[in-house]
Length: 147
Image (cartoon, rainbow, N blue to C red; front, side, top):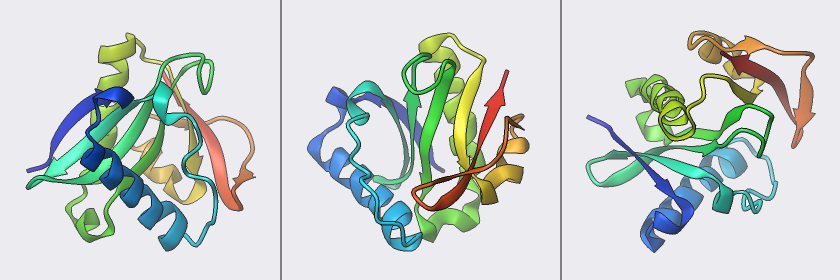
């Protein structure tokens, strides 16, 4: 079973940070064929949600306090290692991220910038589209909110 843990940036070990950056690069840059600066200077301000299976980080998301990324708290860089996607852990990851926002920031209101193809996934967790779509790093996105 996958286990989740939340750590501040300075609580990540070097191997954990390396794996997180590797996972994000594998999916967001290589798999999605989107050259963009993943190391964006925001990691230091985020809480890092790690999904660990058999000692390996296979799922990840960043959690932001209200007012940093959006007016509401925010979740970003939601990612599952391609090898493990058939296990549907994306739902567990998002539930853990929502709970992490509540536990660490005391917030129910969450705003995200979601890749358009994941709209139904986020809607299944109570998110609602907010406005028109837009391109972010040449990938169609929509703003969504919950709470």
